Amino acid sequence: MANLFDHVRLLHEQELYHDLKTMCSMVLSLSEQNADVFSMTQKYQMMVFYGDSLYQTEEFKKAEDIYRKALSLKKAINKTKGKSSHLDLVSDVDVKYKIHQCHYSLGQLQEALNVLESVTTKQRSAKINMSLARLYHRTGMDRSAITCYKEVLRECPLALEAITGLICLGVKGPEVVALVMPGIGHGVQTEWLSLWIKGHSFLAAQDFPLAITSFKSLDAKPYMKDNVNLLCSLGEAHFKQGDYPNALLVFQRAHTLDPYNLRNMDIYAYMLAREKRVKELESLSNKMMSVTELAPEPWIVVGYFCMVTKKATRAVYFAQRAYAKDSRNIEALLLKGSALVELKKIPEALLHFREALRLAPHRYEAHAGLIDCYTSSRRTLKEAITVASKAIRTLARSARSLTLYASVLARVPTMEARAKPYLEKAMKLDANYLEPVYIMAEILGKEHNFWEGINLLRGKLYHHSTCRLHQMLGDFLTWTNEHQEALDHYSIALGIDPTNTQAREGMERVEKQSESGPEPGIDMELVDGSENEAEPDFEESDVDSSALSETDFM
Image 1 (cartoon, one colour):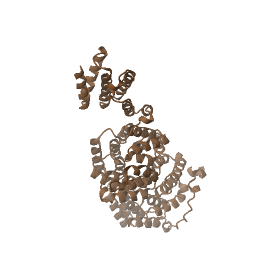
Image 2 (cartoon, rainbow, N blue to C red):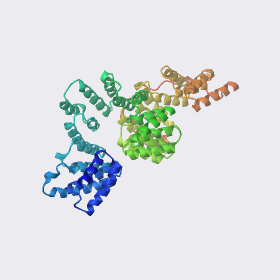
Image 3 (tube, one colour):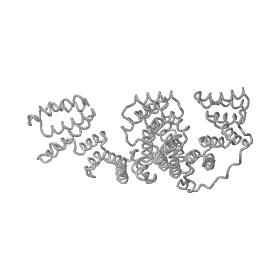
Image 4 (cartoon, helix red, strand yellow):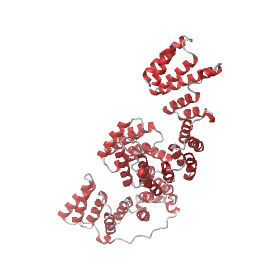
């Protein structure tokens, strides 16, 4: 019967797992009926083979049970004499690692952690320590995660996941370099590494301009040119800084170089959806789903395609599929929250944006999503201002955070004047960021400061040509009876986006006015505009929503 065991082992070596699963089930039943058929060591080995076949065919719960039975048998073997006869058996540590894999695949993170923690410190390989570090990191046990990541680097200095894990947990770049470089030495082959670590350190510290500089300098080196992993890091830095156009270009380049890359393609899909680039998003969806259905990114990409094609219910479903793959996936939470807002399910959307904000407090999109939920009702505008003021403190006084705060103030009729200084500051911080321009123009329109609005929009059109800028300028020119120029700008707006209903309605309105004469009711004395308010000193009290009067929201 020894030949039968050899045949079973051959099935395992050849990775014929379906055949192996059936065969192991048969021969283990045979051994139960006749204890002399196989030795204890052979039976133990076949139980491990059986567990492997079950794991590979995704029967994780049953595989875990078989591995545990194998461990029990191993204990019995260890108590017998003549241990030298079974020195080549799969070790207890390897079987425990396999049990952890089963628990992890079932989403049982605490059980997976408990199994690995039962391995003594001296027996832990780099593989065990890396898995422990991931689990500690995910469950918020940061100090233990740092210890395990460091152990991985002592054995494998080029474990890049361990390096980025330490950086994300707040370990400074120089300390990480000190851990890594002595183990690999300095030379042409590794001169990129310190710059790569520096870039990720800046990224983790929210210093996006320096992160971009570091990654760009690496991309400029001939030996790192067109490295997709590096481009994904560069694109992520642009994205988190709020520079969506450059992020879009970098991710587009990465996808062209490697159509099968998954990393950050969910963010790429989000930006394509923002730009309503439906055909590119459809192509990306098809490509990602052809790569794998086991990762969250393809489901998120398809979800954003559903969003731009007005299928929000399907987007919720695909976001949930992504969330089931990874319950800490920020993009899945943001997609589902956005889709729920589209479906007017605000309480459910709030839960998802809050969870995204808890997991990633520095993500602008999580703050913005939460504020969108609150601003959907006038009853919760005060909560919106509270969240927006926290966003300024969390995201620093960037153009985006100041605009976010001002956008909420602008929704309260008695507080529109308070929004203007924040918008002016935002425009000074980033002249290419157009959102504060749009909001300022809306406020100027309500104030009937038409010439000031026209000057603002014309100034921006020297450097930017967007559908909304042309449409808004058309509105202002209509209000000042500059009908021909208004028509020109409406035409340009529709040329950029033929689906823009505001531009189309504006054009129809101007054509009617041209036929019937100037629209009555506009007091041209109000067109003169007014001087800009002095820019305030941006102290913390300026964004303290607790000081707001209840009457502001009535």
